[in-house]
Length: 369
Ligand code: F6R
Image (cartoon, rainbow, N blue to C red; front, top):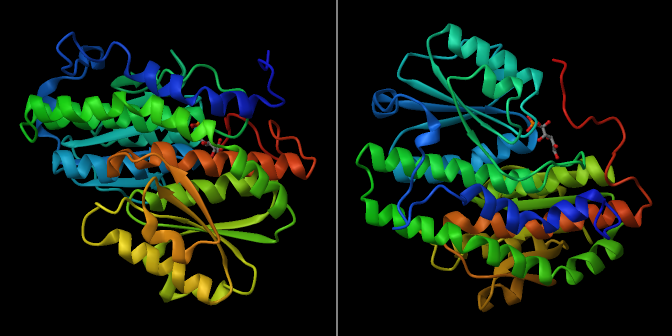
């Protein structure tokens, strides 16, 4: 059943190229143009949308956080990302022009169900992005866009995360095209980039021995920090979540720019810090800023594990170890940079003799509030 892997999680990590490919499947026509007729949401509603609120929990919320950067860039619609359990207990500003996007692998997360009900009562339209056909969340939403990651058995979410980002991107491109923010040609170009991602993810998987070895070496760490910026920020949060839930060790993700506003005080001799470096051709010298963050923590004794794209030699001076990922467009980077972090967390847990698939205190689907 585990297909030769020791853990379902390992199997599911290796199914990620397929999860992305299957989520893209059938959503382009012969000419490479985007087709999402399955959405069954009135296009007039989507055209008049003036705000998107993503509601989700845990890893699904981080997928929404990644999507915020892409959707705002493509559609020029403000996107908020809110944890479902917080959303419900404040007094969110919702109108019939608000599109609520509920992301859930299981489709049964009670916090999300309650948030959807709340949103619909206030007149907002709800679109579910879900991995489980006919689950409560898509049933209670106005429309659904399914991820096709296949069943996820391990408690820690991996392939669903990549599929959620992929589905959110499809939705963003669809909206951008519908509302005239992007020409069909531009949409086709980004779709082409998405279609290249399964191979890029496979390349990262093929290189994962280096991270496995590192995990065994760092298994006794007390704490691990993760730094990222732009789309690398939610990836840092996800890397930290994986390590907490699987390896039971303290881990925190930060926006790299926030470092000097407090977290840098945590850094002491030997502190492992993962730094997710954006592509050198990212905007506004983001690359140089993150590289200098790596230098700053290293100068204070941190052991830096730098995730950087092939050929980026500017990181060499700030890294104790460089983990290479293939060169991909900036917005696609989370699909490759998160993979070494997943493998790292799994391998630390495994080295500590823990049950990777069934971490203590956790359930695969959280059906209570
Ligand atoms: C983390 C994890 C959880 C889930 C969260 C939402 O690895 O599995 O954080 O992502 O409980 O679950 P779904 O997506 O089923 O709503």
